[in-house]
Image 1 (cartoon, helix red, strand yellow):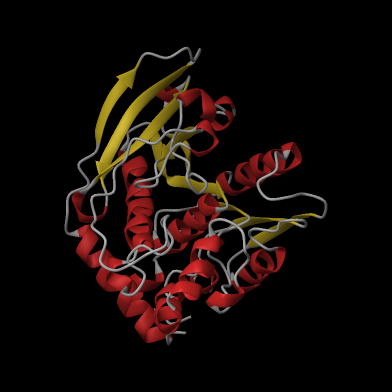
Image 2 (cartoon, rainbow, N blue to C red):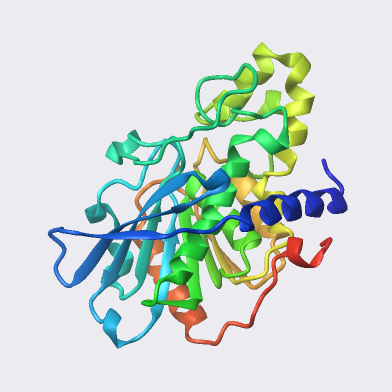
Length: 323
């Protein structure tokens, strides 16, 4: 556990370093089968200046003026996939930015296009959750959180996007990143947080024996002398800890039969979130199960949030807010 001043100092230093580098957004229009929408291969400079790939999909009518945008993040192991995987929000009239998680891709048939050039600094369990875990400055999710915040900034730069109406969205790791970006970026006006990963973490030996938590469990088994040090790093990235600094309206969703991102971790994250919020619980749902009622609720939630002018917000690390 970290005290609030240490927590704020870490994230302030992280983003002061990241913000010193240009965003360098690059766009290439794609020839796709989409009717009434335009897709772009978009990339931007993420943490350390590394190129992060995304799809930007603009529905018809973009020429009429700036529109709201949903920035969507992938589940663990997934990439941005194909543009046809991401037509829900454009069909509802929202611009959509679908962002890679560095180094990931292929799970669920969704390929990624973003490498992770950062070298390994110590032994790790195969996967991403223990990469660089002995030092917060080298931890994998430090770079991924920076990438997520800069993805929101990249969306805000596009002239077709209303920079005051940007939402983040995702499930599992995607829910983790949607919440992290919503707390760490001052540009996010709403967050859709479904079954967030890396939330309300217990001691490492007690995390669920399910992927990707299993990687943390195995690390604690193989390197018990390093488990406390790893847990201290994780405390800075636990989105239940970040949630205490939330500023924008958020819709949380919890699956009652989730054996991976356990329901109690989603409830704890929601409880700590101080800004306007809603909680949806699906008692019989399992992890990342298709859920049409949830999509309808998300659409209604965003329509309500975006119908009102969003006040300017400041991320906690910008103002030294301690919660």
